[in-house]
Image (cartoon, rainbow, N blue to C red; front, top):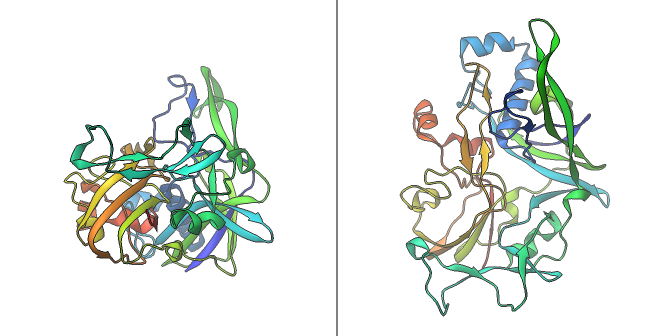
Length: 365
């Protein structure tokens, strides 16, 4: 297992899952940080290139590589990330999008908690509770990023003290382009479009953890849209595993905070509402704070067609649970499902968790 820091050489472009065709659409949006799909694509391409594999032939033959597989078969490859990180006070520190149960009350931060003792009825399904904070002041959405130094404090049920503004980490930089006629090598009339690129601030990068494959300690990556270049290098010493921050082991009441996107058959939860399939024990969902979904798709190079676009629960979503017995959480716990069409190709396995989907932090409430 190795951890790497990924830095841009210029700006990056990470398209969301919405189809985009110059001339028909005029704005290409970006999702940042990129999804695990982007990371696995970059790592797989790098490993195949280092082996001297012809990428066109590999895509055409559809024969799985023993290390990185093929398509939705990921072979031995295991990933965690990418997460945003910054270099501060002589060390690297990861950041996560501020959890959705953190709100602003005036100039301070407060935590929302499930409230079962309300003086009114709600129409929430399955007995879910409203999230509530006791205040007579205006409550607004909290924006920003929670640094690693604040994770334990937040997971212990305390309000964050330090939240990093987005503008201190990265900015979206709009750029104009025009479609090119590949057969002639000339621009096409009335094909002007705009794309939102990502420019990272100094001492800001992406973190990723890679296992199951051999990767050089440093090198170049084709990363994101337009094959933009990035450089990576091994982190030494490695940062603590995400699971080492979990403080709700053996708890009967706990919350699950998404660090990476998750997909569920019922939108933001399993279609049959059965969370026991995820946890391996009986738990009850009490409440949830779910931001707007991420629409992720991509392009299937082998087939030459866009991949299905699906709605994912985004990082920062928070689920509140209760259990009759203390719940044991394993280090490789995966808080996501895999679509049936992907499972069929992998003998029913939940493979998306292997490449970084459904990574979480566990805390108390």
